[in-house]
Length: 160
Image 1 (cartoon, rainbow, N blue to C red):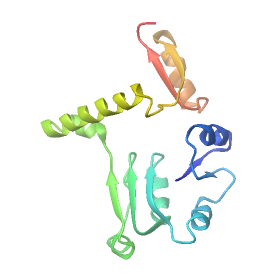
Image 2: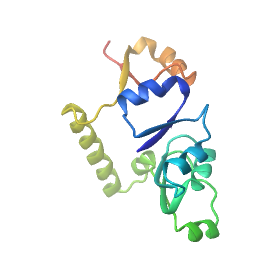
Image 3: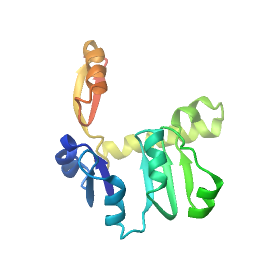
């Protein structure tokens, strides 16, 4: 598994995520590093959590028959790109599943939430929580997130 992160997060990612390789997108050419790490083949799977623009760049980083999963935006892609690379694009839209009105989709969303909470409670999944804030600090916490001052996740305790 490879991941990208900024220079200031390299040590955190190395310690908590433990990928096979970290690509520092601030100091390294991501396209070049993906080619190096895959012997020129490209990545079989890319999960994009950044932006539609990054997802568009990810298309060029995929191996033949590769898969792009995006949670942010769908990149523009031509039929020639899709067929030429035999690629697939999947969109994860959990909010859409909730708003769909489809009881099966809503049930699946609830099942996923239960499974994730169970994994966290059993120590099988680390949500990487780096801070717990009282409700009164919610706005300050959101500003810290927006200004990229937080590594990991913040949780707001509504009872504190």
